Amino acid sequence: MDKNLSALKPALVWKHFAEICKIPHPSHHEEKIRAYVMGVAKGLGLECKEDEAHNVYVRKPASKGMENRKGVVLQAHLDMVPQKNNDKQFDFLTDSIEAHVDGEWVRANGTTLGADNGIGAASILAVLEDDTLQHGPIEALFTATEETGMDGAFGLQKGLLQGDILLNLDSEEEGELYVGCAGGLDANMTFRYEAQPVPANGFTAVQLVVKGLKGGHSGIQIVTQRANANKLLFRLIRQAKKSMEMLLCSVDGGSLRNAIPREAMATLMIRPQDLETLKKETKEFEKTVKAEFEGIEDSILIEVVDTAAPADMIPAQVAENLIRAVVGCPNGVRKMSVAMPGLVQTSSNLARVVSDGETIKLQCLLRSSMNSEKDELGEAISAVFELAGATVELTGAYNGWNPNMESPILAAMKASYKALFGKEPLVTAIHAGLECGIIGTNYPQLDMISFGPTIQYPHSPDEKVNIASVETFYEFLTDTLKNIPQK
Image 1: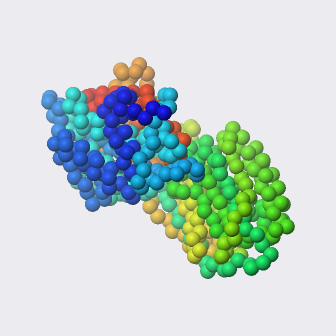
Image 2: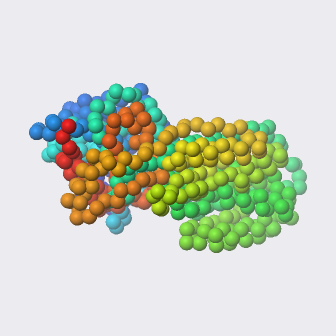
Protein backbone atom coordinates (compact mmCIF):
# COMPACT_ATOMS: atom_id res chain seq x y z
CA MET A 1 0.00 0.00 0.00
CA ASP A 2 1.68 3.23 -1.21
CA LYS A 3 1.18 5.93 1.41
CA ASN A 4 3.75 8.38 0.03
CA LEU A 5 1.41 11.12 -1.15
CA SER A 6 4.24 13.65 -1.19
CA ALA A 7 5.69 11.94 -4.27
CA LEU A 8 2.61 12.96 -6.28
CA LYS A 9 2.29 16.14 -8.33
CA PRO A 10 1.81 18.99 -7.68
CA ALA A 11 4.15 18.37 -4.77
CA LEU A 12 3.08 21.32 -2.60
CA VAL A 13 -0.61 20.38 -2.78
CA TRP A 14 0.01 16.75 -1.86
CA LYS A 15 2.47 17.73 0.87
CA HIS A 16 -0.18 19.79 2.61
CA PHE A 17 -2.91 17.22 1.99
CA ALA A 18 -0.75 14.50 3.55
CA GLU A 19 -0.33 16.69 6.63
CA ILE A 20 -4.07 17.40 6.75
CA CYS A 21 -4.75 13.64 6.72
CA LYS A 22 -2.59 13.27 9.83
CA ILE A 23 -4.67 15.82 11.76
CA PRO A 24 -8.09 14.78 13.14
CA HIS A 25 -10.61 17.34 11.86
CA PRO A 26 -14.21 16.11 11.82
CA SER A 27 -16.89 18.79 12.08
CA HIS A 28 -16.86 20.61 15.46
CA HIS A 29 -13.35 19.32 16.18
CA GLU A 30 -11.24 21.57 13.97
CA GLU A 31 -8.91 23.12 16.54
CA LYS A 32 -5.83 21.24 15.35
CA ILE A 33 -6.41 21.86 11.65
CA ARG A 34 -6.90 25.57 12.34
CA ALA A 35 -3.63 25.58 14.25
CA TYR A 36 -1.90 23.92 11.31
CA VAL A 37 -3.17 26.51 8.83
CA MET A 38 -2.25 29.37 11.17
CA GLY A 39 1.18 27.84 11.66
CA VAL A 40 1.80 27.62 7.91
CA ALA A 41 0.67 31.23 7.40
CA LYS A 42 2.80 32.58 10.25
CA GLY A 43 5.78 30.58 9.04
CA LEU A 44 5.42 32.31 5.69
CA GLY A 45 5.24 35.71 7.37
CA LEU A 46 1.66 36.30 6.23
CA GLU A 47 -1.07 38.20 8.05
CA CYS A 48 -3.53 35.74 9.56
CA LYS A 49 -6.24 35.57 12.18
CA GLU A 50 -9.13 33.45 13.48
CA ASP A 51 -12.51 35.14 13.74
CA GLU A 52 -15.31 34.58 16.26
CA ALA A 53 -16.91 31.92 14.03
CA HIS A 54 -13.55 30.04 13.95
CA ASN A 55 -12.85 30.83 10.32
CA VAL A 56 -9.18 31.32 9.50
CA TYR A 57 -8.28 34.32 7.35
CA VAL A 58 -4.90 34.83 5.62
CA ARG A 59 -3.76 37.68 3.38
CA LYS A 60 -0.97 37.38 0.78
CA PRO A 61 0.16 40.52 -1.08
CA ALA A 62 0.24 40.64 -4.86
CA SER A 63 3.34 39.42 -6.62
CA LYS A 64 5.54 42.07 -8.21
CA GLY A 65 3.84 43.85 -11.10
CA MET A 66 0.38 42.39 -10.29
CA GLU A 67 -0.72 44.97 -7.73
CA ASN A 68 -3.35 46.42 -10.08
CA ARG A 69 -5.30 43.16 -10.44
CA LYS A 70 -8.65 42.49 -8.82
CA GLY A 71 -8.42 40.91 -5.39
CA VAL A 72 -9.20 37.19 -5.15
CA VAL A 73 -10.61 35.30 -2.17
CA LEU A 74 -9.65 31.61 -2.23
CA GLN A 75 -12.11 29.69 -0.07
CA ALA A 76 -12.37 26.14 1.27
CA HIS A 77 -13.72 24.56 4.47
CA LEU A 78 -11.61 22.86 7.12
CA ASP A 79 -13.90 20.12 8.45
CA MET A 80 -14.48 16.65 7.02
CA VAL A 81 -17.32 14.14 7.20
CA PRO A 82 -16.44 11.28 9.61
CA GLN A 83 -17.81 8.07 8.07
CA LYS A 84 -16.37 4.57 8.38
CA ASN A 85 -17.29 1.05 7.49
CA ASN A 86 -19.05 -0.85 10.26
CA ASP A 87 -16.14 -3.26 10.76
CA LYS A 88 -13.44 -0.56 10.79
CA GLN A 89 -11.88 0.28 14.15
CA PHE A 90 -11.23 4.02 13.93
CA ASP A 91 -11.56 7.12 16.11
CA PHE A 92 -11.94 10.32 14.09
CA LEU A 93 -11.01 12.40 17.14
CA THR A 94 -7.58 10.83 17.57
CA ASP A 95 -6.59 8.74 14.54
CA SER A 96 -4.95 9.86 11.31
CA ILE A 97 -6.69 9.14 8.02
CA GLU A 98 -4.94 6.18 6.36
CA ALA A 99 -4.62 7.73 2.90
CA HIS A 100 -2.91 5.74 0.16
CA VAL A 101 -2.44 5.60 -3.60
CA ASP A 102 -4.70 3.12 -5.36
CA GLY A 103 -3.88 3.20 -9.06
CA GLU A 104 -5.14 6.50 -10.47
CA TRP A 105 -6.77 7.48 -7.18
CA VAL A 106 -6.01 8.37 -3.58
CA ARG A 107 -8.42 6.85 -1.08
CA ALA A 108 -8.56 5.95 2.60
CA ASN A 109 -8.62 2.59 4.36
CA GLY A 110 -12.23 2.02 5.44
CA THR A 111 -13.06 5.67 6.17
CA THR A 112 -13.84 8.89 4.41
CA LEU A 113 -10.72 10.44 2.93
CA GLY A 114 -11.45 14.10 3.56
CA ALA A 115 -10.52 15.17 0.04
CA ASP A 116 -13.80 17.04 0.49
CA ASN A 117 -12.54 19.69 1.22
CA GLY A 118 -8.97 18.86 2.21
CA ILE A 119 -7.69 19.07 -1.36
CA GLY A 120 -9.18 22.55 -1.67
CA ALA A 121 -7.55 23.65 1.60
CA ALA A 122 -4.23 22.07 0.60
CA SER A 123 -4.34 23.88 -2.75
CA ILE A 124 -4.82 27.23 -1.03
CA LEU A 125 -1.89 26.50 1.28
CA ALA A 126 0.20 25.61 -1.77
CA VAL A 127 -0.67 28.96 -3.39
CA LEU A 128 0.25 30.79 -0.19
CA GLU A 129 3.59 28.98 -0.01
CA ASP A 130 4.65 29.19 -3.66
CA ASP A 131 6.44 32.49 -4.32
CA THR A 132 7.01 31.63 -7.99
CA LEU A 133 3.34 32.22 -8.85
CA GLN A 134 2.02 35.37 -10.49
CA HIS A 135 -1.09 36.73 -8.81
CA GLY A 136 -2.83 39.83 -7.58
CA PRO A 137 -3.83 40.38 -3.93
CA ILE A 138 -4.99 37.10 -2.37
CA GLU A 139 -7.15 36.47 0.66
CA ALA A 140 -7.49 32.91 1.88
CA LEU A 141 -10.65 32.03 3.76
CA PHE A 142 -10.75 28.65 5.53
CA THR A 143 -14.29 28.28 6.87
CA ALA A 144 -15.41 26.28 9.88
CA THR A 145 -17.91 23.45 10.28
CA GLU A 146 -19.34 23.50 6.78
CA GLU A 147 -20.49 19.90 6.74
CA THR A 148 -22.96 20.10 9.63
CA GLY A 149 -24.51 23.50 9.10
CA MET A 150 -22.12 25.93 7.35
CA ASP A 151 -21.45 27.59 10.69
CA GLY A 152 -18.37 29.44 9.51
CA ALA A 153 -20.07 30.90 6.46
CA PHE A 154 -23.08 31.99 8.52
CA GLY A 155 -20.77 33.56 11.12
CA LEU A 156 -18.58 35.42 8.63
CA GLN A 157 -18.74 39.12 9.47
CA LYS A 158 -19.31 41.86 6.92
CA GLY A 159 -16.26 43.95 6.15
CA LEU A 160 -13.60 41.25 6.56
CA LEU A 161 -13.17 40.37 2.89
CA GLN A 162 -11.74 43.03 0.58
CA GLY A 163 -11.57 41.06 -2.68
CA ASP A 164 -13.64 41.35 -5.83
CA ILE A 165 -13.70 37.65 -6.81
CA LEU A 166 -14.34 34.50 -4.76
CA LEU A 167 -13.03 31.15 -5.97
CA ASN A 168 -14.65 28.36 -3.98
CA LEU A 169 -12.56 25.18 -4.22
CA ASP A 170 -15.25 22.77 -3.01
CA SER A 171 -16.62 21.23 -6.21
CA GLU A 172 -15.95 17.66 -7.22
CA GLU A 173 -15.74 17.25 -10.99
CA GLU A 174 -12.68 18.55 -12.82
CA GLY A 175 -13.54 20.48 -15.96
CA GLU A 176 -16.76 21.87 -14.54
CA LEU A 177 -17.36 25.44 -13.41
CA TYR A 178 -20.23 25.86 -10.99
CA VAL A 179 -22.13 29.13 -11.10
CA GLY A 180 -25.05 28.25 -8.83
CA CYS A 181 -26.14 25.90 -6.05
CA ALA A 182 -29.18 24.83 -4.09
CA GLY A 183 -30.33 26.32 -0.82
CA GLY A 184 -31.01 24.15 2.20
CA LEU A 185 -33.29 23.63 5.18
CA ASP A 186 -33.12 21.23 8.15
CA ALA A 187 -36.28 19.53 9.36
CA ASN A 188 -35.83 18.28 12.95
CA MET A 189 -38.54 16.01 14.35
CA THR A 190 -38.82 14.73 17.93
CA PHE A 191 -41.08 12.14 19.52
CA ARG A 192 -41.00 12.19 23.32
CA TYR A 193 -42.02 9.14 25.36
CA GLU A 194 -41.77 7.41 28.71
CA ALA A 195 -40.04 4.10 28.19
CA GLN A 196 -41.98 1.04 29.25
CA PRO A 197 -40.53 -2.23 30.55
CA VAL A 198 -40.48 -5.05 28.06
CA PRO A 199 -42.76 -8.02 28.81
CA ALA A 200 -41.17 -10.45 31.27
CA ASN A 201 -42.27 -13.52 29.34
CA GLY A 202 -43.46 -14.62 25.95
CA PHE A 203 -41.11 -12.56 23.76
CA THR A 204 -37.63 -12.84 22.31
CA ALA A 205 -35.34 -10.00 21.24
CA VAL A 206 -33.94 -9.54 17.74
CA GLN A 207 -32.22 -6.83 15.77
CA LEU A 208 -33.44 -5.98 12.31
CA VAL A 209 -30.45 -4.68 10.34
CA VAL A 210 -30.20 -2.94 6.97
CA LYS A 211 -26.66 -2.48 5.66
CA GLY A 212 -24.45 -2.68 2.58
CA LEU A 213 -25.94 0.40 0.93
CA LYS A 214 -23.74 2.87 -0.93
CA GLY A 215 -24.88 6.05 0.82
CA GLY A 216 -23.00 9.14 -0.29
CA HIS A 217 -23.42 12.90 -0.39
CA SER A 218 -27.10 13.80 -0.30
CA GLY A 219 -26.56 16.78 -2.60
CA ILE A 220 -24.55 14.87 -5.20
CA GLN A 221 -25.54 11.19 -5.13
CA ILE A 222 -29.25 11.88 -4.50
CA VAL A 223 -29.77 11.99 -8.29
CA THR A 224 -28.62 8.35 -8.55
CA GLN A 225 -31.75 7.26 -6.63
CA ARG A 226 -29.77 5.23 -4.09
CA ALA A 227 -31.64 3.42 -1.35
CA ASN A 228 -32.16 5.04 2.05
CA ALA A 229 -31.54 2.59 4.91
CA ASN A 230 -34.03 4.35 7.21
CA LYS A 231 -36.82 4.11 4.66
CA LEU A 232 -36.11 0.42 3.98
CA LEU A 233 -36.00 -0.45 7.68
CA PHE A 234 -39.34 1.10 8.55
CA ARG A 235 -40.99 -0.13 5.38
CA LEU A 236 -40.07 -3.68 6.42
CA ILE A 237 -41.19 -3.15 10.02
CA ARG A 238 -44.58 -1.86 8.88
CA GLN A 239 -44.96 -4.80 6.52
CA ALA A 240 -43.94 -7.39 9.15
CA LYS A 241 -46.29 -5.97 11.80
CA LYS A 242 -49.24 -6.97 9.65
CA SER A 243 -48.51 -10.65 10.25
CA MET A 244 -47.13 -10.71 13.80
CA GLU A 245 -47.00 -8.93 17.13
CA MET A 246 -43.91 -6.72 17.25
CA LEU A 247 -42.63 -4.33 19.93
CA LEU A 248 -40.15 -1.61 18.95
CA CYS A 249 -37.51 -1.06 21.63
CA SER A 250 -34.94 1.18 19.95
CA VAL A 251 -33.74 2.43 16.58
CA ASP A 252 -30.47 3.77 15.23
CA GLY A 253 -30.43 4.70 11.57
CA GLY A 254 -28.15 6.88 9.46
CA SER A 255 -25.42 9.18 10.68
CA LEU A 256 -25.00 12.68 9.25
CA ARG A 257 -27.59 15.12 7.95
CA ASN A 258 -25.92 15.41 4.54
CA ALA A 259 -25.14 11.72 4.00
CA ILE A 260 -27.61 9.25 2.49
CA PRO A 261 -28.08 6.58 5.21
CA ARG A 262 -26.10 3.41 4.50
CA GLU A 263 -27.07 1.47 7.61
CA ALA A 264 -30.01 1.32 10.02
CA MET A 265 -31.04 -1.08 12.77
CA ALA A 266 -33.92 -1.57 15.18
CA THR A 267 -34.18 -3.71 18.30
CA LEU A 268 -37.51 -5.55 18.42
CA MET A 269 -39.36 -7.98 20.67
CA ILE A 270 -41.37 -10.67 18.90
CA ARG A 271 -43.08 -13.94 19.82
CA PRO A 272 -40.63 -16.88 19.57
CA GLN A 273 -42.96 -18.70 17.23
CA ASP A 274 -42.79 -15.76 14.80
CA LEU A 275 -39.01 -15.76 14.45
CA GLU A 276 -38.82 -17.99 11.40
CA THR A 277 -41.66 -16.07 9.77
CA LEU A 278 -39.81 -12.80 10.32
CA LYS A 279 -36.62 -14.24 8.86
CA LYS A 280 -38.53 -15.49 5.82
CA GLU A 281 -40.29 -12.15 5.30
CA THR A 282 -36.98 -10.34 5.68
CA LYS A 283 -35.34 -12.43 2.97
CA GLU A 284 -38.33 -11.92 0.67
CA PHE A 285 -38.17 -8.18 1.34
CA GLU A 286 -34.44 -8.15 0.63
CA LYS A 287 -35.12 -9.87 -2.69
CA THR A 288 -37.79 -7.29 -3.51
CA VAL A 289 -35.65 -4.24 -2.82
CA LYS A 290 -32.67 -5.73 -4.65
CA ALA A 291 -34.90 -5.96 -7.71
CA GLU A 292 -36.15 -2.40 -7.17
CA PHE A 293 -32.60 -1.04 -6.91
CA GLU A 294 -30.99 -3.29 -9.52
CA GLY A 295 -28.13 -1.43 -11.18
CA ILE A 296 -28.05 1.12 -8.36
CA GLU A 297 -27.34 -0.87 -5.19
CA ASP A 298 -25.43 -4.13 -5.56
CA SER A 299 -24.77 -5.14 -1.93
CA ILE A 300 -28.01 -4.66 0.00
CA LEU A 301 -28.10 -6.90 3.08
CA ILE A 302 -31.14 -7.10 5.37
CA GLU A 303 -31.02 -9.60 8.19
CA VAL A 304 -32.48 -10.66 11.53
CA VAL A 305 -29.86 -10.98 14.26
CA ASP A 306 -30.29 -12.44 17.74
CA THR A 307 -29.62 -10.00 20.56
CA ALA A 308 -29.98 -9.67 24.31
CA ALA A 309 -33.35 -8.50 25.54
CA PRO A 310 -33.37 -4.77 26.40
CA ALA A 311 -34.94 -3.53 29.62
CA ASP A 312 -37.26 -0.98 28.01
CA MET A 313 -39.31 -0.39 24.90
CA ILE A 314 -41.01 2.47 23.10
CA PRO A 315 -44.75 2.67 23.93
CA ALA A 316 -46.83 0.91 21.29
CA GLN A 317 -48.74 3.98 20.09
CA VAL A 318 -45.60 6.10 19.82
CA ALA A 319 -43.91 3.31 17.90
CA GLU A 320 -46.87 2.99 15.54
CA ASN A 321 -46.94 6.74 14.91
CA LEU A 322 -43.20 6.75 14.26
CA ILE A 323 -43.43 3.86 11.80
CA ARG A 324 -46.23 5.51 9.84
CA ALA A 325 -44.48 8.87 9.77
CA VAL A 326 -41.17 7.46 8.51
CA VAL A 327 -42.90 5.39 5.84
CA GLY A 328 -44.87 8.48 4.76
CA CYS A 329 -41.95 10.94 4.92
CA PRO A 330 -40.98 12.44 1.52
CA ASN A 331 -37.47 11.28 0.59
CA GLY A 332 -35.22 11.46 -2.43
CA VAL A 333 -35.55 13.49 -5.60
CA ARG A 334 -38.77 15.49 -5.64
CA LYS A 335 -38.32 17.52 -8.81
CA MET A 336 -35.79 17.88 -11.63
CA SER A 337 -34.76 21.19 -13.15
CA VAL A 338 -36.32 22.19 -16.44
CA ALA A 339 -33.80 24.98 -17.03
CA MET A 340 -30.78 22.67 -16.54
CA PRO A 341 -31.59 19.12 -17.68
CA GLY A 342 -30.06 16.48 -15.43
CA LEU A 343 -29.88 18.79 -12.41
CA VAL A 344 -31.96 17.99 -9.35
CA GLN A 345 -34.08 20.98 -8.38
CA THR A 346 -35.62 19.79 -5.10
CA SER A 347 -34.85 16.83 -2.82
CA SER A 348 -35.14 15.50 0.72
CA ASN A 349 -32.84 13.13 2.62
CA LEU A 350 -34.23 11.36 5.71
CA ALA A 351 -30.78 11.25 7.24
CA ARG A 352 -31.21 10.26 10.86
CA VAL A 353 -33.61 8.27 13.08
CA VAL A 354 -32.31 7.55 16.60
CA SER A 355 -33.87 6.77 19.97
CA ASP A 356 -32.28 7.32 23.38
CA GLY A 357 -34.84 5.96 25.87
CA GLU A 358 -36.70 9.26 26.18
CA THR A 359 -36.88 10.68 22.68
CA ILE A 360 -36.76 9.62 19.07
CA LYS A 361 -35.04 12.26 16.97
CA LEU A 362 -35.20 12.43 13.23
CA GLN A 363 -33.54 14.79 10.79
CA CYS A 364 -34.11 15.55 7.14
CA LEU A 365 -31.97 17.83 4.98
CA LEU A 366 -34.02 19.51 2.28
CA ARG A 367 -32.43 21.13 -0.75
CA SER A 368 -33.82 23.20 -3.59
CA SER A 369 -32.77 25.89 -6.02
CA MET A 370 -36.31 27.27 -5.61
CA ASN A 371 -36.87 28.70 -2.13
CA SER A 372 -40.64 28.28 -2.42
CA GLU A 373 -40.31 24.55 -3.17
CA LYS A 374 -37.86 24.09 -0.28
CA ASP A 375 -40.31 25.79 2.07
CA GLU A 376 -43.26 23.78 0.75
CA LEU A 377 -41.37 20.52 1.24
CA GLY A 378 -40.56 21.56 4.80
CA GLU A 379 -44.24 22.15 5.46
CA ALA A 380 -45.18 18.78 3.94
CA ILE A 381 -42.72 16.94 6.20
CA SER A 382 -43.90 18.99 9.18
CA ALA A 383 -47.51 18.01 8.46
CA VAL A 384 -46.67 14.29 8.33
CA PHE A 385 -44.83 14.28 11.66
CA GLU A 386 -47.17 16.68 13.45
CA LEU A 387 -50.06 14.39 12.58
CA ALA A 388 -48.03 11.58 14.18
CA GLY A 389 -47.58 13.56 17.40
CA ALA A 390 -43.99 14.75 16.95
CA THR A 391 -42.72 18.27 17.44
CA VAL A 392 -41.05 19.77 14.38
CA GLU A 393 -38.49 22.54 14.01
CA LEU A 394 -37.39 23.90 10.64
CA THR A 395 -33.91 25.40 11.09
CA GLY A 396 -30.73 26.43 9.32
CA ALA A 397 -32.38 27.80 6.20
CA TYR A 398 -30.06 29.29 3.63
CA ASN A 399 -30.65 30.57 0.14
CA GLY A 400 -29.13 29.16 -2.98
CA TRP A 401 -26.67 30.91 -5.27
CA ASN A 402 -28.26 32.19 -8.47
CA PRO A 403 -26.18 31.86 -11.66
CA ASN A 404 -24.73 34.96 -13.33
CA MET A 405 -23.91 33.90 -16.87
CA GLU A 406 -22.45 37.38 -17.58
CA SER A 407 -19.86 36.99 -14.81
CA PRO A 408 -16.46 38.48 -15.77
CA ILE A 409 -14.53 35.79 -13.89
CA LEU A 410 -16.57 33.11 -15.64
CA ALA A 411 -15.53 34.53 -19.02
CA ALA A 412 -11.89 34.74 -17.92
CA MET A 413 -11.83 31.17 -16.58
CA LYS A 414 -13.50 29.74 -19.68
CA ALA A 415 -10.80 31.39 -21.79
CA SER A 416 -8.05 30.15 -19.50
CA TYR A 417 -9.32 26.57 -19.54
CA LYS A 418 -9.63 26.57 -23.34
CA ALA A 419 -6.10 27.93 -23.72
CA LEU A 420 -4.65 25.35 -21.32
CA PHE A 421 -6.49 22.21 -22.33
CA GLY A 422 -7.94 22.88 -25.78
CA LYS A 423 -11.57 22.41 -24.79
CA GLU A 424 -14.39 24.27 -23.14
CA PRO A 425 -15.22 23.64 -19.48
CA LEU A 426 -18.77 22.67 -18.60
CA VAL A 427 -20.64 25.54 -16.97
CA THR A 428 -23.35 24.26 -14.66
CA ALA A 429 -24.97 24.43 -11.22
CA ILE A 430 -24.92 21.89 -8.39
CA HIS A 431 -27.69 20.52 -6.19
CA ALA A 432 -25.40 20.39 -3.17
CA GLY A 433 -25.16 23.41 -0.93
CA LEU A 434 -22.08 25.57 -1.33
CA GLU A 435 -20.95 28.33 0.97
CA CYS A 436 -21.08 30.76 -1.95
CA GLY A 437 -24.80 31.37 -1.42
CA ILE A 438 -24.30 32.31 2.24
CA ILE A 439 -21.12 34.33 1.74
CA GLY A 440 -22.74 36.14 -1.17
CA THR A 441 -25.53 37.34 1.12
CA ASN A 442 -23.07 39.47 3.11
CA TYR A 443 -20.78 40.19 0.16
CA PRO A 444 -23.10 40.70 -2.83
CA GLN A 445 -20.33 42.41 -4.82
CA LEU A 446 -18.30 39.19 -5.09
CA ASP A 447 -18.04 37.56 -8.51
CA MET A 448 -18.03 33.84 -7.65
CA ILE A 449 -17.08 30.53 -9.25
CA SER A 450 -16.76 27.08 -7.66
CA PHE A 451 -14.51 24.37 -9.10
CA GLY A 452 -12.29 21.51 -7.99
CA PRO A 453 -10.71 18.15 -8.89
CA THR A 454 -12.63 14.92 -9.43
CA ILE A 455 -13.75 13.42 -6.11
CA GLN A 456 -16.03 10.39 -6.13
CA TYR A 457 -18.32 9.15 -3.36
CA PRO A 458 -17.71 11.98 -0.85
CA HIS A 459 -19.32 11.53 2.59
CA SER A 460 -18.81 7.76 2.38
CA PRO A 461 -15.91 5.37 3.07
CA ASP A 462 -15.64 4.88 -0.71
CA GLU A 463 -14.48 8.49 -1.15
CA LYS A 464 -11.54 8.88 -3.52
CA VAL A 465 -9.81 11.68 -5.43
CA ASN A 466 -8.39 11.34 -8.92
CA ILE A 467 -4.65 12.09 -8.91
CA ALA A 468 -4.39 13.45 -12.47
CA SER A 469 -7.38 15.73 -11.91
CA VAL A 470 -5.66 17.37 -8.93
CA GLU A 471 -2.73 18.33 -11.14
CA THR A 472 -5.07 19.68 -13.84
CA PHE A 473 -7.16 21.56 -11.29
CA TYR A 474 -4.14 23.19 -9.66
CA GLU A 475 -2.68 24.21 -13.01
CA PHE A 476 -6.02 25.79 -13.88
CA LEU A 477 -6.20 27.53 -10.50
CA THR A 478 -2.74 29.07 -10.80
CA ASP A 479 -3.33 30.11 -14.42
CA THR A 480 -6.60 31.74 -13.36
CA LEU A 481 -4.73 33.75 -10.72
CA LYS A 482 -2.18 34.80 -13.33
CA ASN A 483 -4.93 36.06 -15.62
CA ILE A 484 -7.20 37.82 -13.15
CA PRO A 485 -8.51 41.04 -14.78
CA GLN A 486 -7.23 44.43 -13.77
CA LYS A 487 -9.24 46.56 -11.39
